[in-house]
Amino acid sequence: NAGVMQNPRHLVRRRGQEARLRCSPMKGHSHVYWYRQLPEEGLKFMVYLQKENIIDESGMPKERFSAEFPKEGPSILRIQQVVRGDSAAYFCASSRSAGFNTGELFFGEGSRLTVL
Amino acid sequence: GQQLNQSPQSMFIQEGEDVSMNCTSSSIFNTWLWYKQDPGEGPVLLIALYKAGELTSNGRLTAQFGITRKDSFLNISASIPSDVGIYFCAGRENNDMRFGAGTRLTVKP
Image 1 (cartoon, each protein chain N blue to C red):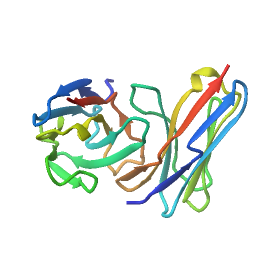
Image 2: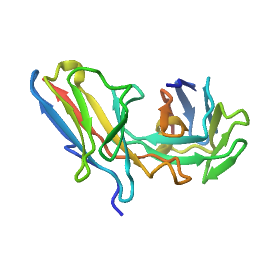
Image 3: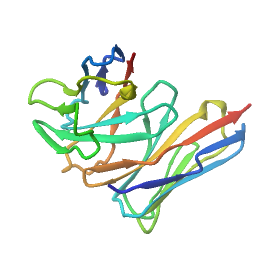
């Protein structure tokens, strides 16, 4: 049973380019969360999605950032016109639907974005 | 969203010593989770707690869900060098999951 799969593991972009980070949740999981982590810091919530719906995007910057979780395929976190301050590790996590008595989030290994 | 206060921020201990860290919140949660993150990796779930007052062990790790549902602690007994890493608490209320800032643990052989 594969865990949460994120790709790419490392991504280098120049300022102004676009970054696309992908996340495939664990099998049977329909909830996806994206977190951002700066070096030496904790995990900052960005967005929570269920299939085809954004449930909570309160942690995501209003401009340049967007996220989706289509009916088919992985969840995608998209950063347009990247700036140096976007350099960070972006972690995806998934969980089962809220109807099950399980609160665990399972994390991927992260995508490390470096903006030159 | 709710803010979690995790302490201490960092700990430097000798191998074999016990470790204790805790997390408090201004709001209640129905689930408390503890994760460990190694450098360059994603957080890995250590212990999940679902009931107020619950005390759960996983090997040398013991965690408790506070009676008020606003706090949790994690203890590590007889620390070993591979315990090094960052430990995060997380509180969940329905589909809202928030993390503490982490406790960075260093274990000296």
